[in-house]
Amino acid sequence: MFIHDSGANIVKGVRLAKYDSARCFIHTLQRAIYESLKIQTEVTATIAAGRRLVTHFNHSGLAQEKLLRIQKELSLPEHQLVQDVSTRWNSIFYMIERLLEQKRAISLYVADHDTLINLTAQQWNLMEQCINLLKPFICEPR
Image 1 (cartoon, rainbow, N blue to C red):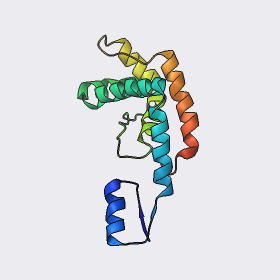
Image 2 (image 1 turned 90 degrees about the vertical axis):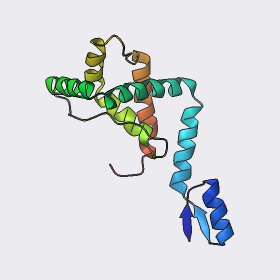
Image 3 (image 1 turned 180 degrees about the vertical axis):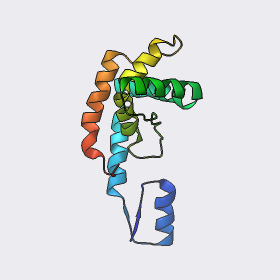
């Protein structure tokens, strides 16, 4: 039995090769969750705003160093932010989870940098709601 995702190229290849196959349930579930997040405009905007913050830190060594100093001052875990990746399951969850973990450090950093926009209180709250909603669907051990 060949287990695969629902990619058209894979489905067609398996069919042409005449293999017995099945679509991966977990992959299908994760895809449904991802698509349901995309249709919620507020959620999409909040995720995009979070992604911009993460991108800022991932593209600036100076920003990462300053964030690390703030984390130490606040006695927060010294973790880098996690960038979501469209091809990696659950990556939006992990990005939001890390943003929430580092909310205080990020907020202090942003307060000193006029060019960077922090998330609003409503967006932080929405991220917390997303985590609560998505947590039961996380299938891979961390």
